[in-house]
Image (cartoon, rainbow over all chains, first blue to last red; front, side, top):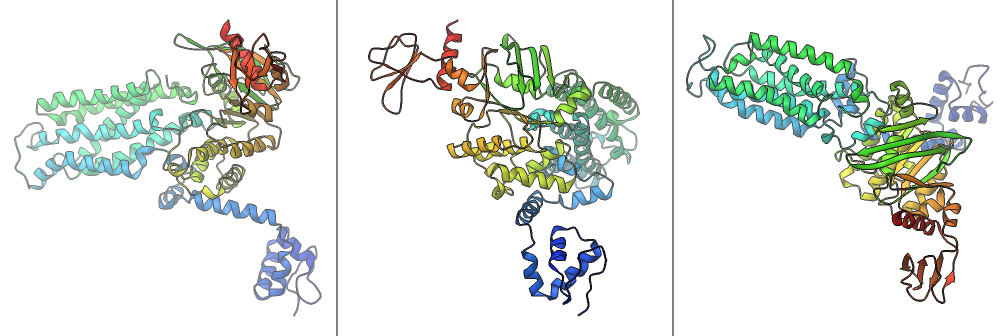
Length: 302
Length: 289
């Protein structure tokens, strides 16, 4: 058998064609180059004597350490399909790990959101499909049943707000003191969690809107009010207690929607003037957030 | 009172902190050097407040803090302190749906250990150090109180911090686990600065070369455990009966009464004071003021 282990600078194979002790030691220590390592491996597959000889060169401590690391990796998990998709989209692979501590991204929360959306949109959808008769007419010409949209218009942006609030309120993060004492930027953590929670709730809310009677632009019209409410809650949290900020944001939505609903024109809350107002609020809150972002790094929002 | 040493890593001058009408810290000066420093004091003495300020989680109302020469009031320097910090809060909460390894992985990301391989190595290392290797896949809700406490210690060790701030790390640990914890701290490489608060005077005596006693928001003592024990020198006796004149009396395991007071009871035997005796003398003196 001829030697299959090239490379003059590498430890040589033995005269009998088996890898010598130096070569096995180098292979076990990981110091031989890749081509030589492949050759050794090819030989080891068919040679029980060399496999046995190799075990004498293995560093038991290093082996145990590698085993512990492998077990830890298995216990941590790879984050599943979601992590792989996010990584393919260019998201750093540690970001899904940060999101694991966000309650509004957990399955139970998202199922609750879907349940609430199904309930509030149920009647309106049934009317739209024709399973139920319309109860009246008001609002935008050409859309006679729009008052049935009131529960959905009331609840959908509030669900988005609740998801974002759960992502940033300290009361929902039992380990928040660790996050404060850690070097990872608090504002970045806040944004990562809030944007993820916002997307996770806004997408099903907008999708639900497709099944409702009313104008075709309704799913898109939910975007600005939802963003503005969340931005307001975050910005207000740098000035007042975070819980108060979330409640204030909710009230800013609930009161006008109820008022318009009693006038049987609930759709006005997502029409042009409201969209302009929401855009202005969003811009103002973005400025406040950027200028006061250090509050989140200090672990105190106000 | 200030413990002055040449290798000061942490220095606090005049730290004060109020919670409403309660003064938690009152112009506290202290210095910490590399090695283990124990913080003793009764509930409400200001230990947790002092440690949370050291960990940059709270800010003092007044006073200055310097950690490795860095000022936590400056945003960039605060981040640098946090990069070198391991912190175990007293009331650490857990995401109960996490596994032990998943929780450590999460904290490792917060500590900017972003490479997957390096995170797994760190998680494996601290799990082994705290004896939790076999619990890596166990959900936190299924862990006992002692195991959760060890998990809290494990997360503080992630990243091999130079400054370890541990608020009551031995709470909930059984005697064997406390021994392992002492071994773990004593054997940490790199000679980090470790400050731990505890109610267990024997923990202090066993592993802390330095001890600071906080009473009513002020440093009442700073020195070695032997010096603390010496503050009770000549004031601790054992006797067969209770002495009503003693400041403190309790019956020991040998069925004899141990007295701390200014006058010896009849037939009493003067004994060598322990760290706990010294601490009790200090707290009694402070309480009498």
